[in-house]
Length: 402
Ligand code: SF4
Picture 1: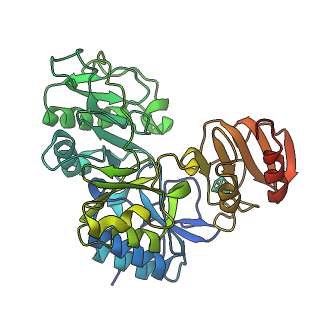
Picture 2 (picture 1 turned 90 degrees about the horizontal axis):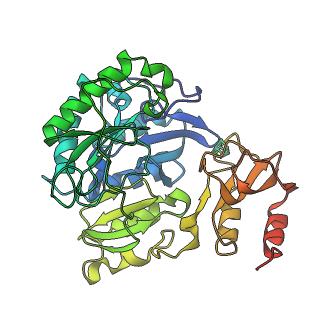
């Protein structure tokens, strides 16, 4: 039985990074976020998470841009039971303080014993040595032969140098890089990288980084013991939907899927685990190898085609899932899929949680209607306002080139 807390702490406070012990109150109840350890859940853990979503939440599971999984629609009354369940299945640390530590984001195709796994294992063991850092801070570990996390939000990175800058090795030597700095500090081993990174977190706090909140915004020069002189390797492509050397990559439309769809994708017994990514894609280990796994290739509610137009679209949960929203977003996003060339963002309000980068077509809810913004963000200047969903579809259909 859960006894750390019998009600969610600070559930009504906004502006922090929610977790499981500190869920966030949203329009459809509490949002409970789970951080998969080393970015991986075993098949039985993933099945348990699907059960949890259906028993305690709305039945939807979301995959965030920091590669976390979250449940929605949890009530304050059922939250204690959910926490007991998540702890019991190893989905949440029983110590509430553990989820306040910086998150580790791993390149998803790490292998046991490789440099990414080794760095993550060493760092995980030393998280308790780090000072208290601002809530949203995270660490990317991306030292496979082909780096992939270059565009993903992280405050400190362990990564590879550009080929030829450090060693003859084609994939480069090891670097530790502070976010917002173009260059990193070379280190000569995984253990040295971890040591350096832990030291950097202490420097960050001691030099006033707490006020900035994120490394990117902390403009104080790096200390003399951390000379940044080496260029990191360019990020390679993210794993494509479909066959993968470890199984199958499936996509989640707009970053969310019903638990029933995810359960169907991992039901084949050949599936061993699920790895999370920051790109609305899951790597289902063992899927797609033989007839027993053929079902994972065509599960309703998941994306399997790299050309699916929904991959290029952004949509936040909207109404009724978020109390800031005055419009539903997901139905409109589905209706617009394939009708618009270029990037599309459907937002429940001007906050634009799903994307902070301009979209060729952005629709933002306001007072029960949609504002249409061309080439901008959800808080941009609209070219039309107060549109109904039908009017949006009609307007899009009449655009030149359709
Ligand atoms: S953009 Fe607005 S409506 Fe959408 S999730 Fe964020 S706050 Fe809620």
